[in-house]
Image 1 (cartoon, rainbow, N blue to C red):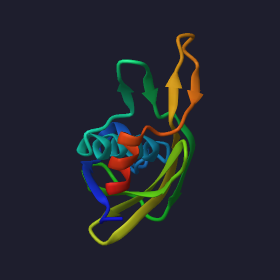
Image 2: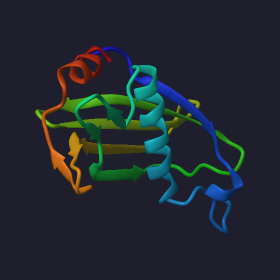
Image 3: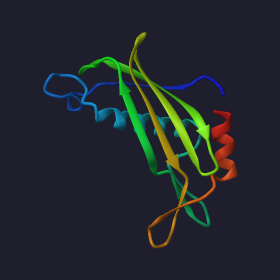
Image 4: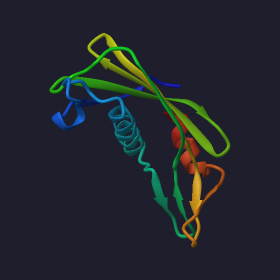
Length: 137
């Protein structure tokens, strides 16, 4: 696979706790934001609609390991790469850095699901056109 996609963002005041450090839960929002930017860069989205059906990618697993704090106003680079593409899921790897300092590492697995008329997601194979774009990333 090619080099990771990088998404830069600045820490907002709302992201911090009473100590002025980014709250652990916010990293999951950052991962989702970076994933969306990555998919848009590929011409994709987490919600795809074609003539027959709606496809979405709900998260089925997420984790984050923290190494160093980041604070309000600091810029953080979030590198995203694809760790694995399965039959009906994709696993992303995230690396959070401030300059050369590793802040955190995360992982998210999203399942490809068809949204049924009843509104319930049903796991399906990743469509060939989506898989092709993910494999080129």
